[in-house]
Image (tube, rainbow, N blue to C red):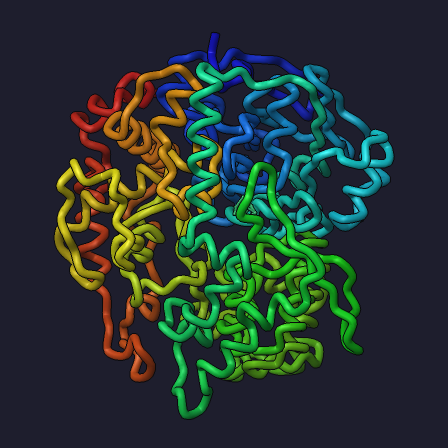
Length: 625
Ligand code: SF4
């Protein structure tokens, strides 16, 4: 009996319409846990080098983890895995809501799609019964219309599903997969892969339960988590009251949040504190009509907001979160909160990644400032810094892939290639993926993760940044990791390996980052109680390291080199900012990257994996392919 798992993976060939199941063995579960861990192992086996990310041979998988369906605190996340059309390498994206539990209640730990349907389809799972349904009438609908229509058709108003909007159908490379009309698997361009397969939606309803090995222990540990979350506790208090919008003002003030397309700004010209307050905490939740929680989550960081003004009327749409408030806000010097709420809604309806979309608009604003583009190019849209209505208009045209929006619809790297005139200087991306809203000049560990993780430009893939803010995980005390200061550039390699590996465990078991970091979740104890295993921190760090390496091996097979992922020099502080709290800082990204590569058992020059490391991780047999 494989406790914590359903023990099966489903494969759907969209070209032939055929399905087949494969067993999820205990060895696979224990070696790769779930989420993008098992996802990476499957994609490495099922895909060949050189696959076109938008071709039928690409595989897109939806994976849960062993915590999914157990109802333990914040166990609601699923992961999408695929070859990213945005970067051309490994892609994954993580999302909350209620879909993960619904998928698992159908008797599968994950579902993988291959091929391409000749017409739009909706894939529906009902317990163990998979079916492909015609979705021609859904093509062109936004995500909310799609959800409502499918729920009516299936006759279940509480049906859980994921879908793409019109932007994904048009295969824009910065598109998301959406659930609950506003929770997004936003990164890596995963929406475009669904669009390329003519897969409009995937819904699931089931009645199968997840068996756990020691139910009393699961309940006890869960109660302990809930009690801990009730204590005066930061960051959980902030998330409960404001969601991540509660971090905006402080992050802008410290300039963890980038301003004006990462070039900063003089306080005298732009009073940062005063302007940031307009898009932060109280000034966001004053639009909130109710809270939104993902499944099994007592934190409920989400919110539902409405706008009744004379510019945009919106009823009961999702509240923008930190990344969105900064990407359409501080990054564009825009403090018009209603324009950001509107942008968030456009992204949700059309299925776009708010980080990449906002960052691409900030890129366009800098092109506009430098007269590389003018109103003649933008179709009359004013792209002056801070012009919120211009941001909304431009985003709408990107979502529809019309006019100047079509130039920007595939992100900043492609836009710079199309615009030319040296505009690449203003495109803030790593390997094609726009950089999230945390500045490596503030916490250099972000820089390491942005260039070292197999999915580049990601703030949720772990590293030393938590330690740099002073959040040391007490469960690692026995590892005697070095004490470091934020701007030390030596002795961080092993620290990066351990913290990143741990993050891969958090994501692969199916936990939300906020829940797991708010209370230093007792993951080994909970995993043992769910699965009946006898694992421990050291084994899990090794497993997280294996998951990292499996994703990296996918890239290496594609011809990846360490130079493939580089931080733009502006983001490293070269030249350094001349204003603000990060003034004068240049981070030594070369040393950080080299140390991380060495700690991960890689040659920092060629990127090759050392034989001994493959053996240590038990991957030497797999890599022969
Ligand atoms: S903390 Fe927020 S994102 Fe995480 S599970 Fe809870 S509601 Fe969802």
